[in-house]
Length: 58
Image 1 (cartoon, rainbow, N blue to C red):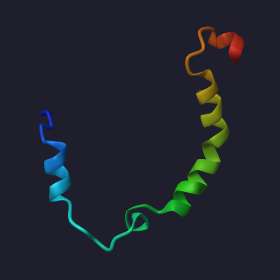
Image 2 (tube, rainbow, N blue to C red; image 1 turned 180 degrees about the horizontal axis):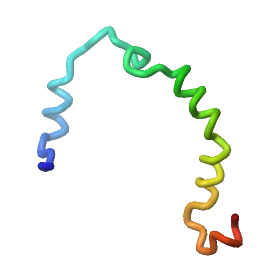
Image 3 (cartoon, helix red, strand yellow; image 1 turned 120 degrees about the vertical axis):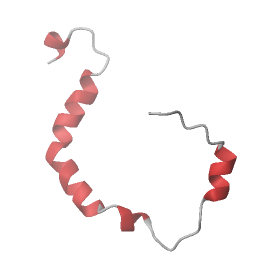
């Protein structure tokens, strides 16, 4: 995989205006439903990040 050497200003100049909103690309209702299914597990993992003694914290 090669490096992306595009200058950020060049990248911004190449963007085109569109009438497509974020909802065109993403089904936010589906994302919310899926998040609700795993939110407790995600919160637990977030709590455990950076803990030095996982057995004690679990």
